[in-house]
Length: 153
Image 1: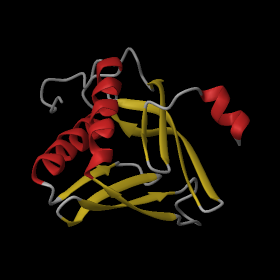
Image 2 (image 1 turned 120 degrees about the horizontal axis):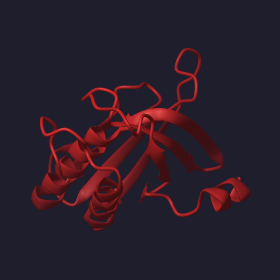
Image 3 (image 1 turned 180 degrees about the vertical axis):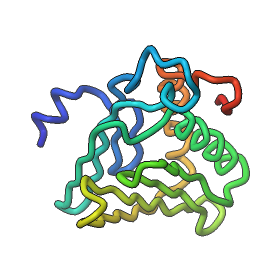
Image 4 (image 1 turned 135 degrees about the vertical axis):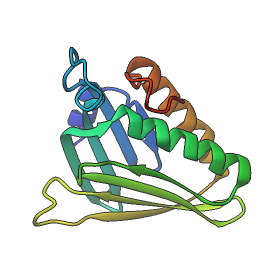
């Protein structure tokens, strides 16, 4: 597993045991609002000797943008939630406040949604959020939301 991570390089987005590498747009020359935002990505989540990997066109730049904005609000208010709500079933992340400044992150990740379910839970505090927000913004600079009708971070 260490060799795989070494070959992938530094993740574009990382928080607790979740890592996301973005490899590029699925359809880099697409001119429509549906196909243009899909990203080829690899996601990995691990905790306590459990490790799950997914890859493919599993995430859209607009989903990262929404997660970034919600994470900013979560950091400002220290209450509420921020979700990476991917349309595809392979990955979903929910950050929610437990008490002001204390959060829970639940990662649902599966390479085969028809026969598997994997859920990881992490406890964290607000000090994790600035790096998450910054990494989402950096990813969006490289892979921006392409159509004006969609939100931008």
